[in-house]
Length: 378
Image 1 (tube, rainbow, N blue to C red):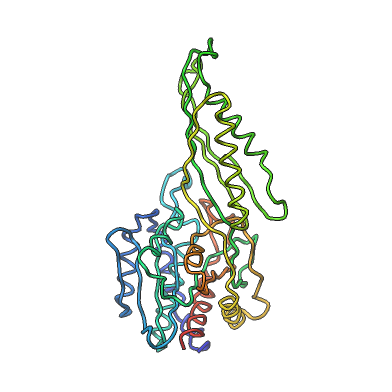
Image 2 (tube, rainbow, N blue to C red):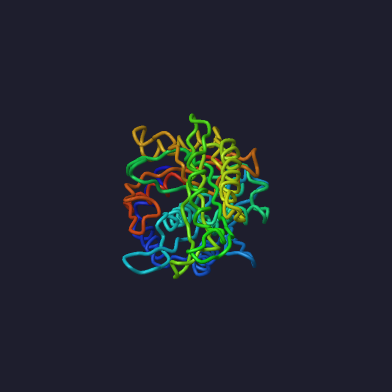
Protein backbone atom coordinates (compact mmCIF):
# COMPACT_ATOMS: atom_id res chain seq x y z
CA UNK A 1 0.00 0.00 0.00
CA UNK A 2 2.82 2.42 0.86
CA UNK A 3 4.30 1.90 -2.62
CA UNK A 4 1.00 2.76 -4.31
CA UNK A 5 0.51 5.80 -2.07
CA UNK A 6 4.05 7.07 -2.69
CA UNK A 7 3.72 6.59 -6.45
CA UNK A 8 0.35 8.40 -6.59
CA UNK A 9 1.59 11.35 -4.56
CA UNK A 10 4.72 11.81 -6.64
CA UNK A 11 2.74 11.58 -9.88
CA UNK A 12 0.25 14.17 -8.63
CA UNK A 13 2.65 16.69 -7.10
CA UNK A 14 1.49 19.45 -9.45
CA UNK A 15 -2.17 18.77 -8.65
CA UNK A 16 -1.53 18.89 -4.91
CA UNK A 17 0.39 22.15 -5.14
CA UNK A 18 -2.16 23.74 -7.48
CA UNK A 19 -4.94 22.92 -5.00
CA UNK A 20 -2.89 24.63 -2.29
CA UNK A 21 -2.35 27.67 -4.55
CA UNK A 22 -6.09 27.98 -5.20
CA UNK A 23 -7.00 27.79 -1.52
CA UNK A 24 -4.18 30.14 -0.56
CA UNK A 25 -5.25 32.75 -3.10
CA UNK A 26 -8.91 32.57 -2.08
CA UNK A 27 -8.66 32.87 1.69
CA UNK A 28 -11.80 33.52 3.74
CA UNK A 29 -12.09 34.45 7.41
CA UNK A 30 -13.89 32.55 10.16
CA UNK A 31 -17.58 31.73 9.55
CA UNK A 32 -17.32 33.18 6.03
CA UNK A 33 -15.65 30.23 4.29
CA UNK A 34 -18.44 30.17 1.71
CA UNK A 35 -16.48 29.81 -1.53
CA UNK A 36 -13.99 27.53 0.22
CA UNK A 37 -16.84 25.24 1.20
CA UNK A 38 -18.25 25.24 -2.33
CA UNK A 39 -14.83 24.31 -3.69
CA UNK A 40 -14.51 21.41 -1.26
CA UNK A 41 -18.02 20.19 -2.03
CA UNK A 42 -17.18 20.22 -5.73
CA UNK A 43 -14.05 18.14 -5.18
CA UNK A 44 -15.89 15.62 -2.99
CA UNK A 45 -18.61 15.33 -5.60
CA UNK A 46 -15.99 14.61 -8.28
CA UNK A 47 -14.69 11.79 -6.09
CA UNK A 48 -18.16 10.34 -5.57
CA UNK A 49 -18.02 11.12 -1.85
CA UNK A 50 -21.35 11.85 -0.17
CA UNK A 51 -21.17 15.07 1.83
CA UNK A 52 -23.24 17.16 4.20
CA UNK A 53 -23.43 20.92 4.66
CA UNK A 54 -25.26 22.99 7.27
CA UNK A 55 -27.65 25.96 7.13
CA UNK A 56 -26.06 27.74 10.09
CA UNK A 57 -22.33 27.42 9.39
CA UNK A 58 -19.88 26.72 6.60
CA UNK A 59 -18.51 23.31 7.62
CA UNK A 60 -18.50 20.39 5.21
CA UNK A 61 -18.54 16.70 6.23
CA UNK A 62 -17.77 13.93 3.76
CA UNK A 63 -18.69 10.27 4.32
CA UNK A 64 -16.81 7.36 2.79
CA UNK A 65 -17.47 3.75 3.72
CA UNK A 66 -19.86 1.97 6.07
CA UNK A 67 -19.70 2.12 9.85
CA UNK A 68 -21.08 -1.42 10.07
CA UNK A 69 -17.95 -2.77 8.38
CA UNK A 70 -15.43 -1.57 10.95
CA UNK A 71 -14.29 1.42 13.04
CA UNK A 72 -15.17 5.03 12.34
CA UNK A 73 -12.35 7.53 11.93
CA UNK A 74 -12.54 11.27 11.40
CA UNK A 75 -9.91 13.19 9.43
CA UNK A 76 -10.13 16.92 10.09
CA UNK A 77 -8.89 20.07 8.39
CA UNK A 78 -9.59 23.67 9.45
CA UNK A 79 -10.79 26.08 6.76
CA UNK A 80 -10.51 29.68 7.93
CA UNK A 81 -7.92 32.39 7.37
CA UNK A 82 -6.89 35.43 9.37
CA UNK A 83 -7.54 39.08 8.51
CA UNK A 84 -4.18 40.83 8.50
CA UNK A 85 -2.17 43.78 7.28
CA UNK A 86 -0.07 42.24 4.49
CA UNK A 87 2.47 44.51 2.80
CA UNK A 88 0.38 47.56 3.61
CA UNK A 89 -3.02 46.11 2.68
CA UNK A 90 -5.65 44.62 5.01
CA UNK A 91 -6.79 41.29 3.60
CA UNK A 92 -7.81 37.70 4.28
CA UNK A 93 -4.61 35.73 4.67
CA UNK A 94 -3.79 32.05 5.22
CA UNK A 95 -0.86 32.56 7.58
CA UNK A 96 -1.65 29.60 9.85
CA UNK A 97 -1.47 26.88 7.21
CA UNK A 98 -5.13 25.97 7.01
CA UNK A 99 -4.90 26.09 3.21
CA UNK A 100 -2.24 23.39 3.48
CA UNK A 101 -4.30 21.34 5.92
CA UNK A 102 -7.30 21.32 3.58
CA UNK A 103 -5.05 20.41 0.66
CA UNK A 104 -3.54 17.44 2.49
CA UNK A 105 -6.85 16.07 3.75
CA UNK A 106 -8.56 16.48 0.37
CA UNK A 107 -5.74 14.72 -1.49
CA UNK A 108 -5.43 12.00 1.13
CA UNK A 109 -8.95 10.96 0.20
CA UNK A 110 -8.27 11.50 -3.51
CA UNK A 111 -5.15 9.35 -3.33
CA UNK A 112 -6.84 6.47 -1.55
CA UNK A 113 -9.83 6.61 -3.88
CA UNK A 114 -7.71 6.56 -7.02
CA UNK A 115 -5.43 3.71 -5.94
CA UNK A 116 -8.50 1.57 -5.34
CA UNK A 117 -8.57 1.54 -1.55
CA UNK A 118 -11.91 0.57 0.00
CA UNK A 119 -12.34 1.35 3.72
CA UNK A 120 -13.52 -1.40 6.05
CA UNK A 121 -15.36 1.06 8.25
CA UNK A 122 -16.38 4.68 7.89
CA UNK A 123 -14.19 7.71 7.20
CA UNK A 124 -15.71 11.07 8.14
CA UNK A 125 -13.93 13.86 6.30
CA UNK A 126 -14.33 16.94 8.48
CA UNK A 127 -13.71 20.37 6.98
CA UNK A 128 -14.18 22.58 10.01
CA UNK A 129 -14.84 26.34 9.98
CA UNK A 130 -13.63 29.01 12.38
CA UNK A 131 -10.71 27.41 14.18
CA UNK A 132 -9.26 30.87 14.82
CA UNK A 133 -12.29 31.87 16.90
CA UNK A 134 -12.05 28.78 19.11
CA UNK A 135 -15.67 27.92 18.32
CA UNK A 136 -15.45 25.98 15.05
CA UNK A 137 -14.92 22.56 16.63
CA UNK A 138 -17.84 23.21 18.96
CA UNK A 139 -20.07 23.85 15.95
CA UNK A 140 -19.14 20.44 14.54
CA UNK A 141 -19.63 18.79 17.93
CA UNK A 142 -23.09 20.32 18.29
CA UNK A 143 -24.14 18.60 15.04
CA UNK A 144 -23.32 15.20 16.55
CA UNK A 145 -20.62 14.50 13.97
CA UNK A 146 -18.09 13.04 16.42
CA UNK A 147 -20.37 11.11 18.77
CA UNK A 148 -19.70 7.78 16.99
CA UNK A 149 -16.02 8.32 16.18
CA UNK A 150 -13.48 5.79 17.41
CA UNK A 151 -10.47 7.69 16.05
CA UNK A 152 -9.71 11.22 14.90
CA UNK A 153 -6.64 12.61 13.16
CA UNK A 154 -5.69 16.14 12.19
CA UNK A 155 -2.50 17.75 10.91
CA UNK A 156 -0.76 21.09 11.40
CA UNK A 157 2.27 22.61 9.71
CA UNK A 158 4.93 23.51 12.27
CA UNK A 159 7.39 26.41 12.42
CA UNK A 160 11.07 25.76 11.78
CA UNK A 161 11.80 26.53 15.44
CA UNK A 162 9.99 23.27 16.36
CA UNK A 163 10.92 20.89 13.55
CA UNK A 164 12.49 20.86 10.11
CA UNK A 165 11.23 19.77 6.72
CA UNK A 166 11.46 15.98 6.54
CA UNK A 167 10.38 15.55 10.16
CA UNK A 168 7.01 14.91 11.78
CA UNK A 169 5.61 14.22 15.24
CA UNK A 170 2.75 11.92 16.29
CA UNK A 171 1.07 14.67 18.33
CA UNK A 172 1.17 18.36 19.19
CA UNK A 173 0.68 19.16 22.86
CA UNK A 174 -1.02 22.52 22.64
CA UNK A 175 -1.75 24.44 25.79
CA UNK A 176 -5.03 25.88 27.04
CA UNK A 177 -5.92 29.41 25.96
CA UNK A 178 -8.51 31.91 27.17
CA UNK A 179 -9.05 35.37 25.78
CA UNK A 180 -10.88 37.91 27.95
CA UNK A 181 -12.27 41.31 27.06
CA UNK A 182 -12.77 43.91 29.75
CA UNK A 183 -14.80 47.11 29.98
CA UNK A 184 -14.20 49.91 32.49
CA UNK A 185 -16.68 52.67 33.26
CA UNK A 186 -15.67 55.78 35.18
CA UNK A 187 -16.78 59.42 35.45
CA UNK A 188 -15.70 62.23 33.15
CA UNK A 189 -14.36 65.44 34.61
CA UNK A 190 -12.16 68.40 33.68
CA UNK A 191 -8.49 67.47 33.99
CA UNK A 192 -8.04 70.49 36.25
CA UNK A 193 -10.42 68.88 38.76
CA UNK A 194 -9.56 65.15 38.67
CA UNK A 195 -11.09 64.59 42.10
CA UNK A 196 -14.52 65.05 40.53
CA UNK A 197 -14.00 62.19 38.08
CA UNK A 198 -13.07 58.51 38.00
CA UNK A 199 -10.15 58.05 35.65
CA UNK A 200 -10.30 54.75 33.76
CA UNK A 201 -6.63 55.08 32.78
CA UNK A 202 -5.75 54.73 36.45
CA UNK A 203 -7.87 51.58 36.51
CA UNK A 204 -6.06 50.22 33.44
CA UNK A 205 -2.70 50.82 35.07
CA UNK A 206 -3.78 49.01 38.23
CA UNK A 207 -5.16 46.07 36.23
CA UNK A 208 -1.95 45.66 34.23
CA UNK A 209 0.20 45.67 37.36
CA UNK A 210 -2.10 43.29 39.20
CA UNK A 211 -2.12 40.76 36.35
CA UNK A 212 1.65 40.98 36.00
CA UNK A 213 1.96 40.11 39.68
CA UNK A 214 -0.02 36.86 39.55
CA UNK A 215 1.88 33.73 40.60
CA UNK A 216 0.94 30.14 39.70
CA UNK A 217 2.68 26.76 39.80
CA UNK A 218 6.17 27.50 38.37
CA UNK A 219 6.61 23.91 37.19
CA UNK A 220 3.89 24.35 34.54
CA UNK A 221 4.25 26.84 31.72
CA UNK A 222 1.65 29.61 32.05
CA UNK A 223 1.23 33.30 31.31
CA UNK A 224 -1.30 36.11 31.59
CA UNK A 225 -0.81 39.49 29.96
CA UNK A 226 -2.85 42.50 28.92
CA UNK A 227 -2.65 42.63 25.13
CA UNK A 228 -4.99 45.50 24.23
CA UNK A 229 -5.99 48.82 25.85
CA UNK A 230 -8.15 51.61 24.51
CA UNK A 231 -9.11 54.70 26.50
CA UNK A 232 -9.68 58.41 26.21
CA UNK A 233 -10.57 60.59 23.28
CA UNK A 234 -9.24 63.51 21.30
CA UNK A 235 -9.26 65.93 24.24
CA UNK A 236 -6.23 65.66 26.47
CA UNK A 237 -7.72 67.89 29.16
CA UNK A 238 -10.58 65.52 30.02
CA UNK A 239 -10.62 62.68 32.54
CA UNK A 240 -11.72 59.66 30.44
CA UNK A 241 -14.71 57.65 31.61
CA UNK A 242 -14.57 54.58 29.37
CA UNK A 243 -11.91 52.04 28.48
CA UNK A 244 -11.58 48.56 27.02
CA UNK A 245 -8.81 46.04 27.49
CA UNK A 246 -7.96 42.50 26.43
CA UNK A 247 -6.17 39.73 28.32
CA UNK A 248 -4.50 36.66 26.83
CA UNK A 249 -4.25 33.76 29.30
CA UNK A 250 -2.31 30.56 28.57
CA UNK A 251 -1.40 27.43 30.52
CA UNK A 252 0.05 24.09 29.50
CA UNK A 253 -2.57 22.14 31.45
CA UNK A 254 -6.29 22.57 31.87
CA UNK A 255 -5.92 22.43 35.66
CA UNK A 256 -3.46 25.32 35.77
CA UNK A 257 -5.63 27.30 33.35
CA UNK A 258 -8.55 26.96 35.74
CA UNK A 259 -6.48 28.28 38.63
CA UNK A 260 -4.84 31.05 36.61
CA UNK A 261 -8.12 32.24 35.16
CA UNK A 262 -9.59 32.58 38.63
CA UNK A 263 -6.61 34.74 39.68
CA UNK A 264 -6.79 36.90 36.55
CA UNK A 265 -10.47 37.65 36.99
CA UNK A 266 -10.00 38.45 40.67
CA UNK A 267 -7.04 40.76 39.89
CA UNK A 268 -8.77 42.60 37.06
CA UNK A 269 -12.09 43.13 38.81
CA UNK A 270 -10.62 44.23 42.13
CA UNK A 271 -7.62 46.25 40.99
CA UNK A 272 -9.67 48.04 38.37
CA UNK A 273 -12.28 49.03 40.91
CA UNK A 274 -9.81 50.43 43.44
CA UNK A 275 -10.70 53.98 42.36
CA UNK A 276 -14.45 53.15 42.29
CA UNK A 277 -14.60 52.43 38.57
CA UNK A 278 -16.91 49.67 37.33
CA UNK A 279 -15.14 46.73 35.68
CA UNK A 280 -16.82 44.02 33.61
CA UNK A 281 -15.19 40.96 32.02
CA UNK A 282 -16.37 38.57 29.34
CA UNK A 283 -14.76 35.49 27.83
CA UNK A 284 -14.21 35.92 24.10
CA UNK A 285 -12.65 32.55 23.26
CA UNK A 286 -11.31 29.45 24.97
CA UNK A 287 -9.27 26.45 23.85
CA UNK A 288 -8.46 23.45 26.01
CA UNK A 289 -5.06 21.82 26.33
CA UNK A 290 -4.24 18.64 24.44
CA UNK A 291 -4.74 15.28 26.11
CA UNK A 292 -2.65 12.33 24.96
CA UNK A 293 -4.12 9.39 23.03
CA UNK A 294 -1.37 6.72 23.24
CA UNK A 295 -2.91 4.23 20.79
CA UNK A 296 -3.51 6.83 18.09
CA UNK A 297 -0.07 8.33 18.58
CA UNK A 298 1.49 4.87 18.14
CA UNK A 299 -0.37 4.40 14.84
CA UNK A 300 0.79 7.81 13.60
CA UNK A 301 4.38 7.07 14.69
CA UNK A 302 4.38 3.97 12.51
CA UNK A 303 3.07 5.97 9.55
CA UNK A 304 5.70 8.68 9.99
CA UNK A 305 8.51 6.12 10.07
CA UNK A 306 7.17 4.44 6.93
CA UNK A 307 7.21 7.78 5.09
CA UNK A 308 10.19 9.64 6.58
CA UNK A 309 12.25 6.92 8.25
CA UNK A 310 13.28 6.70 11.89
CA UNK A 311 15.27 9.92 11.52
CA UNK A 312 12.11 11.77 10.53
CA UNK A 313 10.20 10.87 13.70
CA UNK A 314 10.50 13.56 16.39
CA UNK A 315 8.82 13.93 19.82
CA UNK A 316 5.58 15.90 20.06
CA UNK A 317 6.28 19.61 20.55
CA UNK A 318 4.92 21.22 23.70
CA UNK A 319 3.58 24.61 22.68
CA UNK A 320 1.63 27.40 24.42
CA UNK A 321 -0.30 27.89 21.19
CA UNK A 322 -3.98 26.93 21.23
CA UNK A 323 -6.02 24.65 18.94
CA UNK A 324 -9.74 24.01 19.09
CA UNK A 325 -9.10 20.47 17.74
CA UNK A 326 -8.69 19.37 21.35
CA UNK A 327 -12.34 20.11 22.16
CA UNK A 328 -13.17 16.91 20.29
CA UNK A 329 -11.42 14.68 22.81
CA UNK A 330 -12.60 16.77 25.75
CA UNK A 331 -16.17 16.16 24.59
CA UNK A 332 -15.55 12.44 23.93
CA UNK A 333 -12.82 11.30 26.36
CA UNK A 334 -12.83 7.77 24.92
CA UNK A 335 -11.86 9.13 21.49
CA UNK A 336 -8.38 8.26 20.24
CA UNK A 337 -7.45 11.64 18.76
CA UNK A 338 -4.19 13.22 17.73
CA UNK A 339 -2.85 16.00 15.55
CA UNK A 340 0.19 15.27 13.38
CA UNK A 341 2.92 17.87 13.61
CA UNK A 342 4.42 18.31 10.14
CA UNK A 343 7.89 19.76 9.64
CA UNK A 344 7.83 22.30 6.82
CA UNK A 345 10.69 24.78 7.40
CA UNK A 346 7.91 27.30 8.05
CA UNK A 347 9.15 30.85 8.73
CA UNK A 348 9.17 33.51 10.11
CA UNK A 349 6.39 31.93 12.19
CA UNK A 350 2.73 31.01 12.37
CA UNK A 351 0.39 34.01 12.01
CA UNK A 352 3.16 36.17 10.54
CA UNK A 353 1.57 37.95 7.55
CA UNK A 354 4.40 36.79 5.28
CA UNK A 355 4.56 33.21 6.54
CA UNK A 356 5.73 30.65 3.99
CA UNK A 357 6.85 27.02 4.04
CA UNK A 358 8.34 24.32 1.83
CA UNK A 359 5.40 23.08 -0.25
CA UNK A 360 7.07 19.70 -0.69
CA UNK A 361 5.93 19.07 2.89
CA UNK A 362 2.38 18.75 1.55
CA UNK A 363 3.47 15.55 -0.19
CA UNK A 364 4.76 14.11 3.09
CA UNK A 365 1.51 15.06 4.81
CA UNK A 366 -0.65 13.30 2.22
CA UNK A 367 1.45 10.15 2.53
CA UNK A 368 1.35 10.11 6.33
CA UNK A 369 -2.39 10.72 6.55
CA UNK A 370 -3.10 8.13 3.85
CA UNK A 371 -1.14 5.47 5.70
CA UNK A 372 -2.83 6.35 9.00
CA UNK A 373 -6.26 5.79 7.45
CA UNK A 374 -5.26 2.50 5.88
CA UNK A 375 -3.91 1.23 9.19
CA UNK A 376 -7.28 1.83 10.87
CA UNK A 377 -9.88 0.96 8.24
CA UNK A 378 -8.22 -1.87 6.29
